[in-house]
Length: 554
Image (spheres, helix red, strand yellow):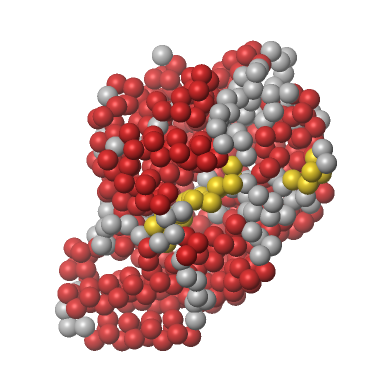
């Protein structure tokens, strides 16, 4: 079914509660593991229906944050989703304590039960008012960013639509564009500080209500970190500081020379060539057509997937005023359909949507065929391997998008992938400090960000900026507000994707078969086991990062 034709009906919380009570009673009265599994399949159907309606409302609200109807629907779900989550948790408690747990575990796997255990540690009914407040605060941040009205050469643009100018090959245009962006964050600085301050205190209070010292433990549970802990993450970040930061700084120095600059300024971040970054040669429609050709040639599985996406209009990728910033893939379980949301803006990022987000969507399309719903419930570091690796697998088709600048794109993509990892680790370490010190003032948070920038990105120079020079650049990163502790997943995944890059340079088909296996395995095993099963080294393993850097410098 085409997305525009998918019917929407507000989830009736009372009716949902009634259906959950029937499920709970039937589960309790079941006389065998098989009977309980039959009830569990009804649980799949109920939650699929509820989550599909919530997701349709979210997408349509994100498409136009000023749409009054879907704005009210989003507010409604911000309020009721913690209550809905409570019904799910009640059910999870039952299945977790089932006398037939062994038989159920054989059907849905040990990972599912580990995730249930984490879910129980991460929620209590008494948290509902705090979770409602948290939802309202993240929605407030999203609306503030999406509603930016920047005056630019006779037009009113939002932050996403300013991107072509902040990445212009004309340095003077970049400077003026970044000044406008900086002024927006300076103007909204107090409100952004207020929102984040309330979020940190809210999340800390949730954690302490559950008996945790701070939000970090609760955050790890909510991110379903089911096979590694913060000490392992810290050791990984230390590997990045030791091996990857010097490598990335060498790439930045080469970039500075290529751009003919005496000093790299923050306005030069993400600029790779003096003549400007390669841009897609076609219109948005032509980019989508080229993507369809590419996926038809890549493999039979990707052909089927992309044709399905196009036929059912499961993309909304054009940048528009009042559209939520950023991009994502989400899933509509009733229709077994991924959906891709993005903001095309005329830069190479438009092609990244067709590679990165389609990596997510391809895996979602495959796992949607698995009758065990828990296998769709992948953790984020695994999910990001699917997307970041797809960026590399599709590189040999870049002529379709960039013409004679395809090789420039491939060079830029590899440098950008490598430069990202230190930034991602910095975002993660910053959040660890913030949640360990929830009493910090906005100024203290900014000072810590500046301190970390000197460690992870020592080349950075904020001359000409006011807000960013004072340590406020992190407020552009929506994950810090909306998805706490998420960002390290990108780094772990990029570490794995770079291994796939090395593999495909030697044996493309062998690397693709490994990747396809990873996508099909989904969440049937733990991250640290999955990557070994498909022939990758764990990022947590000592020497893994050093080996990758040595491979990239050959």
